[in-house]
Image (cartoon, rainbow, N blue to C red; front, top):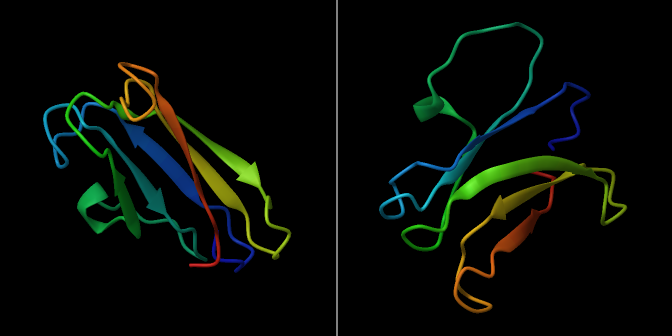
Length: 98
């Protein structure tokens, strides 16, 4: 995501309540030269669901370099997001280059 040559980790937490009851979240942890244990409170980025019961982070994936800018991008799924209709779901594309 940040172009430093180290692998990064995307963790889905679809039951997270930071954005509302079961709004969900995804956490991005940027890799580095040493292995360390960290709390998700120390993650480099947190992406929370828009509303209660969105279940954001139910599915997460690397998307490769969609924008061809040299930085990998990520996808975060919110299985029950209602923006497109009741329970239609949503997918968010987050561009790299942090």
